Length: 180
View (cartoon, rainbow, N blue to C red):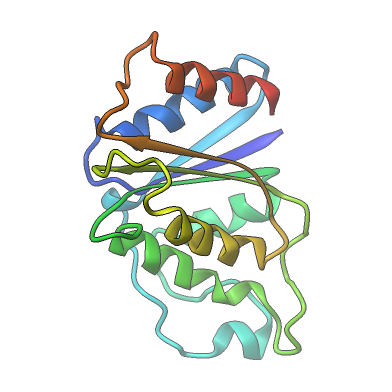
């Protein structure tokens, strides 16, 4: 199985990144192949509304660091997206990342992406209420579901939850990776 993880946090040691890396550890131990993209380190432009993707029914033509991602996405079985919460929503670079998926629909609105890919969301927030931003996360993930992906799980980290090797959230992440 091929798994792609998108790390949306600008901080390398962030809680959301640590949780995703734990999911990947569990998956890799079961022989799955994992690729990681760190949005903050990528040259990633926002959608330019050029229309080439629709006109030619192709992946986005922008010449940036998502070129390799498109190939991986078409081959992947699982997409994991993660983000810190900034101002009650996923961070801005992850919104730009999301918008670039516009190319995955043809002019007639049919999908260019094989349906049935598994989707996992991992989010981290300062608000200690784990459900405080549930609607924002569900909206973000629903955009990927609109491309035929099937939501498997959402993990939300709050400031009140430790991210240590023995923490329940880390155990849950590892088990999720093992089950993929």
